[in-house]
Image 1 (cartoon, rainbow, N blue to C red):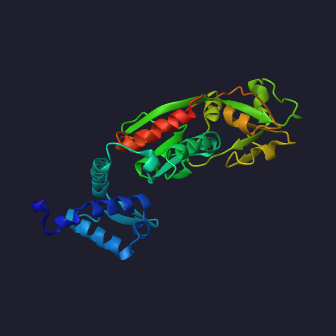
Image 2 (cartoon, rainbow, N blue to C red):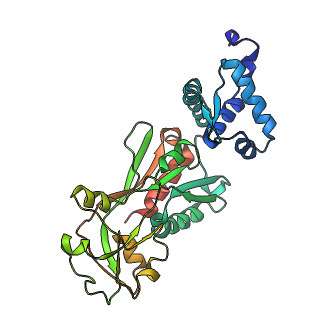
Length: 300
């Protein structure tokens, strides 16, 4: 450490955590709000780190603090160091009944409707004082894990790359949902018939595209929707009494169908719902308990 000179004291864990926060939030102000300090405190810490590493670390572009190449390398090393410290601080055993910790689960609409009620019920039963937060996973839920925004990711977002672990919850496929008065309600459709229907497309935005659309486009077809919505919320009301058809995950369709009719889709787009976590939490007693409880409560 001596070779870093008089600024060596800047390399404490709090300073490294501030560095990570500025990168994650893209702003000194946002990092200060997250830490509950003044912006000047964040600026002072980054200034010390700049002198220590002889690099600007961040440059402002399009209203965000963008890391330099040197900073990107430091961020990876700092993240590993803080993860190791976090793991060292974790207790070897976890008592859910006496815990007042908080856990965050990242997921989307499908999981909030079908799985989260079962998960929350199981968590409340075993750990009544635990605080539970559910956040949107969107199409990049793995970043929620890497950024420490979530403890666990639940959804069709299984990861096989290094640094992640996952376990399958169940398999799923798509089906067609429509009003009972629709002439094709419940009928097995040919590809040609399916493509001529008035489609209600759920466009989740970001980088996410439903698996049946990947399958449809891989076969050389293009869907021309009559209506595009950002979420399955309100789907039943939109389909009732209309000529629209929505292609939705079968389990979700069964849950919200009520007075609608569901039939097979020629593009099934089979996929898996998984629980995903990072190597950082893999050996944590609390996270092991959380994962096993989630998997058990969601088992069929």
